[in-house]
Length: 243
Image (cartoon, rainbow, N blue to C red; front, side, top):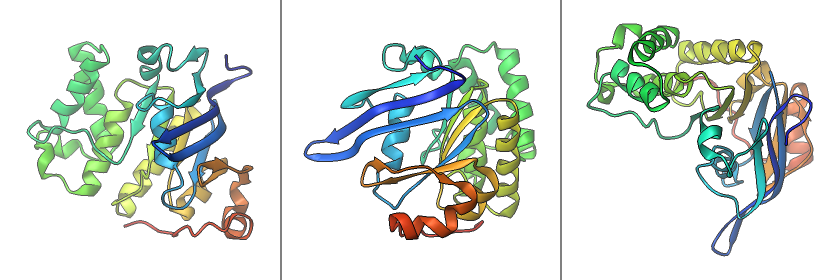
């Protein structure tokens, strides 16, 4: 069980794909009201770890806990507390933006009226209120990113797992998502995000964990991320700004 306000925890998680070990005994904690950045070069296992934490991929060894739940003993209860934004939008192109959100809300047992209200509110919050009746298939990549975050928030999760949330966004989109993450942090949400955007990370995260070769080293204070990543870990991280 998790203790002392600890919300999300991976304990000695390993994951193999055939002969390749993508994660090697990874342990990680994200506390209530904390934003943690997960950094590392391409191929270091960051997306694999997020998928394990989201119970989308079972670990070869190790355990994942969310509050007092063993995630893989109670995957339904775990998913009800998790919101994930990955590389895929999971949007249905033939549905409108609002219809997509209502569909996902209903999947999480929201009543239709509640799902409609929450969908409208979230579309406004991510700056897509004026596009609510457009089909998702005509959205730009940046707009789809905003819709993906709205989808991840539909069931009001306590934990957010975000894989490159600032990808394909212009400065306005980055600002909107940054504001939403700060709001969720203030509400006590636990947030783990993968990003190469060191500028955004430095402004948002409480600390950074560095994953290299499937292994997490010690935490890096967020104000020292820039100076110590390359010096201590040799990470060839590409620093990117808003796009």
